[in-house]
Amino acid sequence: MKLIHEMDLTKIPFHLKFHYAAYSELPNFYHSHQGLEMIYIYAGQGDILVNRKVYEVRPNSLYIFQPYQLHRIRLHVTTETPYIRSKFLIEPSIFYDRLQHMPLLQKFFLQIWKHEIAQPVIYDMQSNPFVLELMKEYQSRIKTPSPAPEIQEEGFLFLTQLFQLLKNNWHTHLFGDASGILQKREYHQAEHVIHWLEEYMHEPLELDRIADELHVTKHHLSRLFKKATGSTISEYMTVLRIQKARRLLETTEHSIEQISQDIGLGNVSYFCEIFKKAMGITPLQYRLFLLKHP
Image 1 (tube, rainbow, N blue to C red):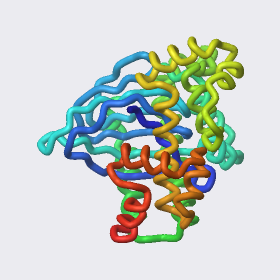
Image 2: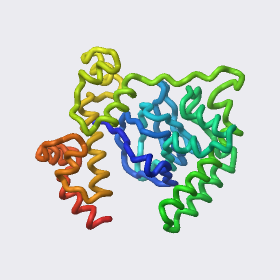
Image 3: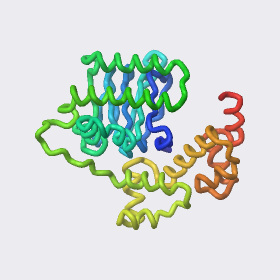
């Protein structure tokens, strides 16, 4: 079963996580994000598939994934060869609006957000020491606990400087000859389905309705989605609902019954059944675990 990473980027538009490691094998899956995702890899072995191209994982490289863009990360992780990275997930509409007094940088960010990126991977970023210095500086700032608004403001300042460095040093690498006409990125139909599932997760899954909106037959839609993601639409919806349920259990005091309603499953018994199948424990056991291990 594959994963969709879902966060409430409207309330917390900048999720920044610096220099963290995995020491055991990670699942190899296709997934996407609501927002713009950037991963800076310090160490790791494997490859990344995006835009139907495979890119080798190398140290000191930056990988850019646009909203709802399907990609697969395949890594070979052991205690001797850990996967170490920093990850930045951004709500692009909010970041774009905040750049209104920096029109050149705003224009460049719009290209990153909505246009076709010729080379979404930048290797050998250590050739510009300012990138590593910037990440190291911001990482030291957030070690001291701070109010959420302050962290978000610091995050905006960090991202502004990071995109300025990308604009000044890697614009041609990302988009080719500056004199060329930039192309709007074409969404794969599977990405439209993912967007629809996230928007209407609280409603019963109706394949006929999705097919009608995308002007394809239900059979063609199912086959297309399975080919693109390796999962059925119903499997994807189930994972999406489990992800949402986990976040509600972690961040709210809603009852199990209310959470079941919030994710579009009126049958509480069925909700508990699929949650336990995915997580190994029931929603109530998960909440009790969180209380003991905040």
